[in-house]
Image (cartoon, rainbow, N blue to C red):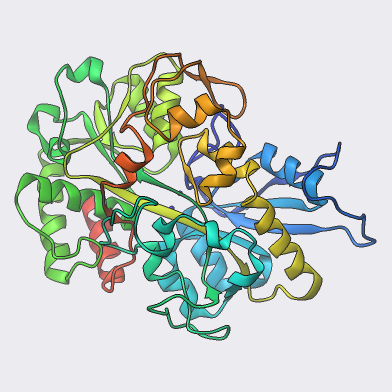
Length: 431
């Protein structure tokens, strides 16, 4: 888990698919009353270079962080693939890394990121068991196909690049946010119920369907569709064999040649424009993109589907070059991030915070009831920037946290045959 920032709020769009090389999004600072995390002004300015995909970014977050801790956050925003490349080739160009768990199978063997000490994370024991045990707080197990975060959360030791099979003190990424994704639809143009991923390939929507062009994510959406059509049942959608990749791409290529797809989008704005214009009526989407379309006064639904959701999760770590005082600042920043303000801010965008208790403490009861409990909104629902998202009485697509996360079928993934998959995916796009 990565679109150009929209008017909903800075950092609203997921994975920030900015084209071209990674660029500095800006240096955010602020001043005012110091609350929560008082600091004593040091002789050396506290600055952290934050590399990520805009999932957790926002001017309000960086400003509040500075007010509370004195730490200035310098955002370096890039696409998912470019974030990974930068870690592999320029590990000294950032301090804090914000990335998705599925990327760890590439990043950890590079030895360019530091394992983090869980004992230094104040809220670690309060992190949702979705990350630590693969289950909801109520104990319900959730789908584990793909690179589920609990499979790659722990390392065997502080200098290890081997994922541990049971909890240790050493953590790859400190969890921050996650979500359950599905298809977006235009109910006003479709005018009938949609209940299955199979509808993406329904000839009824020929020339009106779209899928995202990010191989590690798009392949998972394709697998959900193919399973739903009954053409193949994957033992593990997140770790296909070459034969399974070939089959998947064959089916998708045939659909493409038949004119099923209007486009293959790569960034947030592309997905919003396709759906808001009516060029597509059913497509891969991200929750905030659906919200953006609705904020334009256009009917759009993040449709729950009977086969379940494809999920993703993000977290923080550090560059291997971060040492001494700067390392302590990084731990301070991560602890601040989990303390509640950022969690509430991101929950209001449709994501889920890794520490639910602190996020809840930073939201109004009616907001928590809408976003997390699946209850009708008692008041108008607004985004972090005050934008009206939903009017009173609305119910969140997919219902409650338990309904959505409890029906996760798979996670974004790096497969054993990843290089082969990416090549085949690119052939499909070019076909």
